[in-house]
Length: 107
Image (cartoon, rainbow, N blue to C red):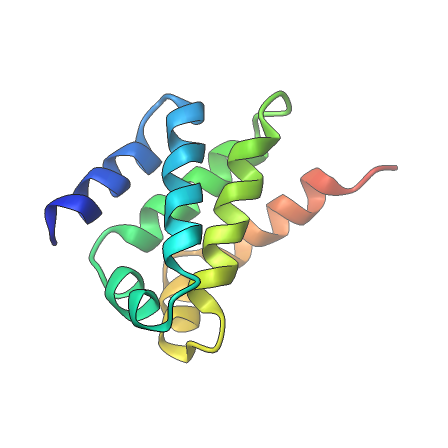
């Protein structure tokens, strides 16, 4: 794994949700590019870190920015990229996405 990817994964997995949201935002922006979707989506550690951030953000009622940026990163990395969709599923993404939807539901 390259150094920038390692740094992004470390920030995504860190305890500082503001820094994690910023890392997810950077990954979301990178995911807009087709070549970057493969490079970053295929890097070891990206999907567990993104799914982990989303799971943590789902439980943090006071910090929706981390949830929003994690969802953006997931969406952009999965856009027209079947391999990344499979990687997301393999990393437990369904549970995290369902939790995000539940957190956004207003009763």
